[in-house]
Length: 166
Image (cartoon, rainbow, N blue to C red; front, side, top):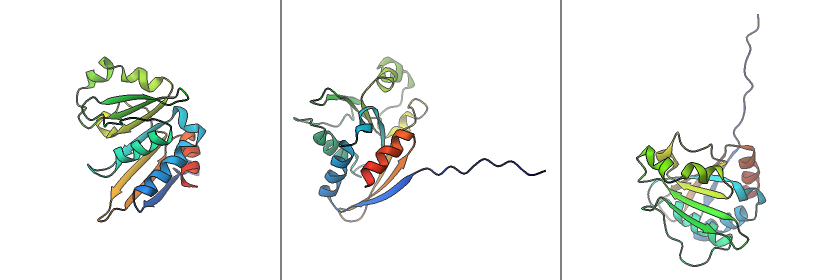
């Protein structure tokens, strides 16, 4: 009797090199122009100083956010609203350690609702977060370059990956 095998499912991914902030900004602009971004969840991974918050700032600027854009390191989440009404939530789970905070702060509702969700340090909230549509793992090199590994985790992520990596 022949053994049944599950089909091999390839996870779409791409690796980019950002030579500097201009490349980060160009990538953010490309991603911002993708209609699938409106209700996406993007997970941002990388060591301290890798460029996660810098990428988020460029993306928010590309989406029309003006004024000061601060890191949500202590607040855990910073809400924004794009000029077209798009709600955007920038999470930083670096200091997240109490699972009760997930419910108390209403994070479940934010992730279930409309809008763009960007999460730095998503592994610190593992088990609470939905699957990321797109994951960016940013690695700082010895100079100003960054190696960025993009992985699509959902059909929406596949669309975003195609738009951003084009």
